Image (cartoon, rainbow, N blue to C red):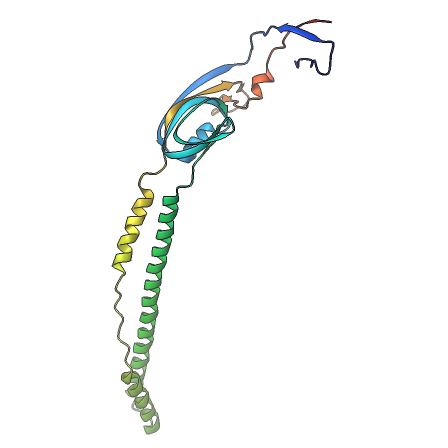
Length: 232
């Protein structure tokens, strides 16, 4: 039951209110966690009313009383859908940029080798085809002379089989950068108490389970009315 407003009812004076015991089913769930990733933490906090302490392996952001905090130690109380923001790590951004640059350079080195290898294969195939044609006894002198001239031209500008030399320095640096990216990931440890007000008992089937309803609207969904004592 909503209380009458003294603004809309100027002559109404409320001396006091007396709440009754609520019939809403309440539960308190204690959750402890250790070195969980950011996504898992968001799942724990999303849509829940909770109080707790969280410590992160790196600084993160959260808003407290309209002020943005930047820390690795977070203490919060009675917060619904508490939001923590994984701050952008500039060093990780630089590492990712280095990885992309090194990977591109290694790909280009491999592509250059593949291009040179294709040219060598085409050259050897052309030489082999001419040599095979020259073994044909039915060739005329003109055709044989023409093929021989082609073979001479090819042999005068030979293409050697290219040897691939991997860019070892870039490959080694790439491994270092990849390890730097995976070392010391952002993780969270802590404990919190989740407050649950109201439960969903609807459902059927062998796998049916009672589900908690975390939305704060349930705080008032089953609330008893407040008797009002008023004077004119």
